[in-house]
Amino acid sequence: MTRDLLGRHRGVMPDWLALYYEDPLEITHGEGRHVWDAEGNRYLDFFGGILTTMTAHALPEVTKAVSEQAGRIIHSSTLYLNRPMVELAERIAQLSGIPNARVFFTTSGTEANDTALLLATTYRQSNTVLAMRNSYHGRSFSAVGVTGNRGWSPTALSPLQTLYVHGGVRTRGPYAALSDADFIAACVEDLKDLLGHTRPPAALIAEPIQGVGGFTSGPDGLYAAFREVLAERGILWIADEVQTGWGRTGEHFWGWQAHGQSGPPDLMTFAKGIGNGMSIGGVVARAEIMNCLDAHSISTFGGTQITMAAGLANLTYLLEHDLQGNARRVGGLLLERLRAVAAQVPHVREVRGRGLMLGIEITRPGTDEADLAAASAVLEAAREGGLLIGKGGGHNTSSLRVAPPLSLTVAEAEEGAAILESALRSI
Image (tube, rainbow, N blue to C red; front, side, top):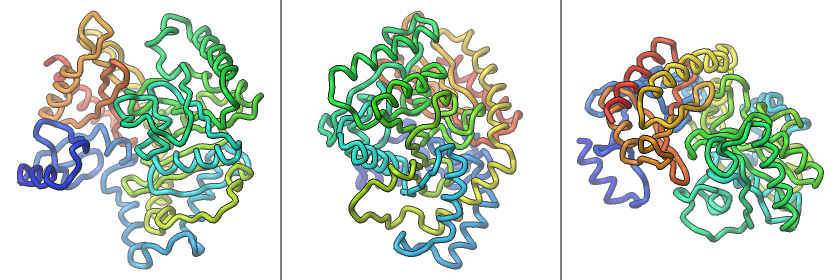
């Protein structure tokens, strides 16, 4: 049945639509931190639909909210008042840390970043944008235009003039050997120099932890230091929290808070986990920025009632069960366990991350060269052992991505680590 479906997939889907595994997997249902395939095999899910199943598969509270809302009305568009949308916007505005915040809902992180770029360039009357090397911000024309990862950037054409800044990868590049303080200072000086060679940019867009890039990041405080330079020049800071938001990093509710010494971002984008699988994205911005558009704009599907009901139920569950605290505790245990394993596996260059957002960088032993074949072999071996993980990476890097639902238990973390250990040792 799966092979038949694969043939049909290839007959109607684009060639560039990637599938994991030599024998691709059809996931038919899930519960908690586990999913099942069409053949009845059970897997511990350490990737959560690319960090989207944030709380748990088939979470009863979300399922109930979606079912009840579907029985009333599913959709009406933003042309009408929408109570669930207003209620979720109120909660997100309060949680965002952005003063006098306004919220606009979209259907994805890509669309959220598109909207943030539209707002920033309109507000600043500039189409120049700063972005980070190794970054990823989505699949649309403008989002690809600010993506600093060649593997996910299919065109050099863009409505934006994008300039790429140092700092998104701590352990590679020209500043890797520096201390954290010196690394930040060097990146700040590079930013200042860059700004001297261009017209005033609209904004810097940055992921606090780079997702597709392999869960890489700069030192804590990097974007706070950048913000001081940017704020002096009126340049906005867009924090892309599509993957880091909602407590996934454990230590903070938002990734930007590790860089919050100079205040919150001017705009923040979110998506993925808030819907627990439903299509929700959005932008939070200061009112004067959000309200800068001088033309009509609506969203047909952004903020639709059924997705808002899911988001409200999911956010309530996350806060009431302190899943941020669980990500910190269980993620810390998992990180130490994986680092202990990695110390005995020559192919592992680094285990990094925080909370339940962990990356394992795979290289040829004794070098900094990516080993794509070895990373794929670990992915396959983990699946054989009953564990699903992700992949990522940028320039000459290859990483495994570990991002389970935030309700992961200690026992499940130990089980997943044991499977990963076996998979890594099998390279």
